Length: 316
Ligand SMILES: CCCCC/C=C/CC(=O)SCCNC(=O)CCNC(=O)[C@H](O)C(C)(C)COP(=O)(O)OP(=O)(O)OC[C@H]1O[C@@H](n2cnc3c(N)ncnc32)[C@H](O)[C@@H]1OP(=O)(O)O
Image (cartoon, rainbow, N blue to C red; front, side, top):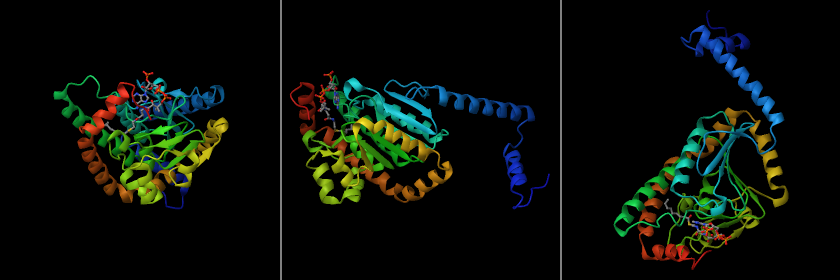
């Protein structure tokens, strides 16, 4: 039939919907419709039957638990016995989980940690058991991966929210500058001990932190390693809001559920309008930080700090 006029809203919507199916056979269209309705009715049943926390699990990961419920995809770091330290496999899994979340039906994506820590940063045992001859290649491969990891935050198309349930260290802190909201328990702390470890800033923090809190406060964190309380991080603009630990999960998830009911396209497009302008700059900052860090990771200062941690002589 001819396309209905622009003010014939209902028939125009129907016409557009049919047209969008292209040459799909009628039987396939009918089956897709039945599948869609079945999935909607089972998800509305499950939202009233399933206990909080037992959301629908997605793909299996070794170091993450990824679930999707009520328009929110939750990516939970899941190495609680290692304070959720990010090892090579976890970096790769986060890249994959973000890619999947960017394409799923969720409105919001949340990053959080399982256990008492949000995340203790890069896994310092990552380079153990490597021979001197292998180290350069391993560092190069890891830095290539780190660049992709950080780019997947820069490129993330929907609001990305960090629910910081406990202390955060190193890269888990720097990457917050690329998140769209950061909700923290009052038990959380924010620590970037790069100089202590012979390292240098990553996660685009050399650019985002001075922008968020001003250069002097950024240097206090990134160069002198000052550990911030959640309230201090909030006063500096790194954290959006702090909640008492005993009501943290309840209050934050109620807030997120309300936000997830906003129109999905509007939310996504508004985030992109705010963030896209800086993408090229952020890619360049990320590349530069990775190149500096590659040299740092091979320095004696860094190797000694890692050896001290591994031999239990030092921790933060
Ligand atoms: C990809 C390319 C490389 C990119 C390089 C970028 C780096 C940026 C960073 O992230 S720098 C930050 C690195 N992180 C740290 O320096 C933290 C090191 N950890 C600690 O200082 C402490 O563990 C602690 C303060 C986080 C917690 O202390 P606590 O006493 O409460 O607990 P334990 O020390 O007993 O920890 C429990 C177990 O967890 C292991 N663990 C904790 N953090 C890490 C880590 N970052 N890497 C590896 N393992 C970690 C810890 O060893 C304990 O394990 P065990 O039970 O087997 O002994």
